[in-house]
Image (tube, rainbow, N blue to C red; front, side, top):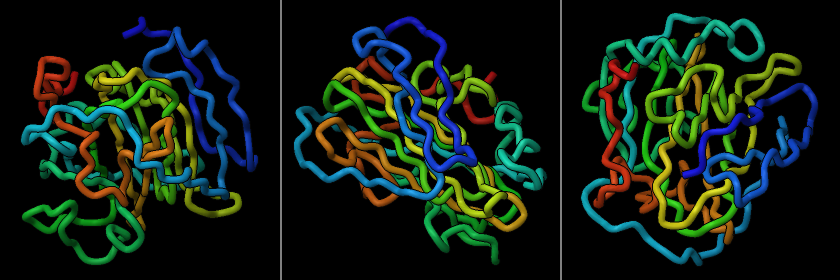
Length: 259
């Protein structure tokens, strides 16, 4: 993997479109060459292409690890500045689990009575909460991948690459998308990362829902156009908790002990 270099963050803004110029040649950046268009209102779903040259070795490791927390921060300003994702690093979660698919689509976690999330065995409150998701993304081919984050209410932080393991914080995220106040509406963003085939890349999503609950959807599209992971992709083979070989041995720290 190439050494870490600085990169620009992709964030929602009040302007409808903003082009982020490539910050590095593709051959020099392995994990995050951000070249995406940031937008508020348009949702672009790339076409599906079934071709993707390689699959990871199969073993009972598919899916994501996740942890649920109380979140006392109210969302009263653009960007949800009162929420600090890094505080979760040392906060003992209320519930932890694994799931093959993540994302909180319409109606799944928008306030209302407590209920299961990601098949949890207990009911979880769906207001003033946060969820920490982590996995490895297997790159089935070399090229530029599009990570799209949609319908976000209240905030979603994303990290991919070395920062997603233990060094993540509120400032080194790959992207932050949040609920918009002027005009009001859910946030949307996409950005691009350049990945090498047959490698595992740590990826982390920290979601925060405030006083009215919240939701988010996402998709990850390979260079050939195949959507390899997303809230609408059941049982993806390309997101795993650890690899079956020595490439990705699993995240080094338990939730709540991620310093």
